[in-house]
Image 1 (cartoon, rainbow, N blue to C red):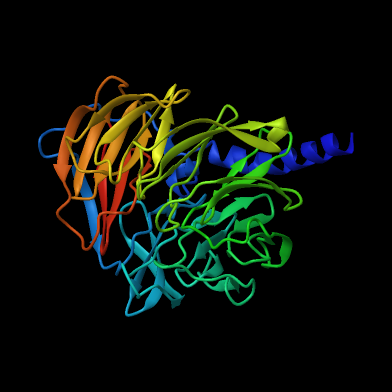
Image 2 (image 1 turned 180 degrees about the vertical axis):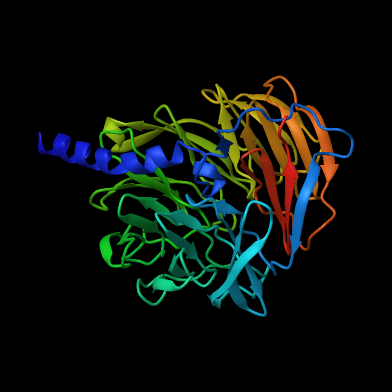
Length: 407
């Protein structure tokens, strides 16, 4: 009975987070980490020129992070200039309202900001490439508190810099220092104090942002570390289960996809995808299927109906998979591989070569409905697109672009 009561208490605590993410007034990493935007009335095809550009801003500095939108309607994104990280605040018309430095950023390889900001209740939370978890006041962009994943929790940095968008559930903020003892931690989002610590499997972090699985008997945080997928009790920090998932470089940046007791975890560098089923109220997992074909490196996937859509890495195709069996329904190389989001029955694919494609959700073929090229900006085409109130926002290094995609 005590376990049931505790589970109910945890579920009630998660309801504000779930309700907040159910509305389109807040956009965090990949909207609500699923990549599925709750927009309607969007264009079903594009002219040869692609969607109309509304505005662009040149001057973000180096970075791969995406735009977010807080409950106030203000838009935030990060960038690095001369080794320093900055938060940029915009209105919906592209006017720069404020710019504030927050400290050193990653300038060692593939320079620039990494993890996307998480907005929550008047605060902005971000993780730097050096593992500094920073809480800023949205009202004036001052720093309220910060914690070092390395110095405070015994973590280690990784080859291309820590990359994580902090997960907030109730009063907890979840992060992955990757230390031997403090492997995954929950901090008080108001002051940064430690609530619980999980030793996990003692592995370093793997560029992955955690997700919440709230509908199990034991609500839990799920993430991918260097060699394992891990589930941790949200209330206590106890490790519930782990599942071995190893690739060449210990790189697992794609957010796991959860639906109907099933977890789809996808990695590049030849590893591919594995589908796990949560059992025993979320206390254990079993493998449902595994495939080395859909092996997205950083582009993520989206689940729509009974299918999952995304692209590969070594397998340089766009894929549609049967969610339940892993059967490949199609593979297509009409455009280069890249990242993917979805809204209103359409896929938005942004390739590593700067191609922006609109694709019908169709499990039978990669059904192009429009394509254009992103010619502005700098460096790699890695930042994930964002949709907000009929506008598609796209970051390419130094440049932020806004496109009208309303019908």
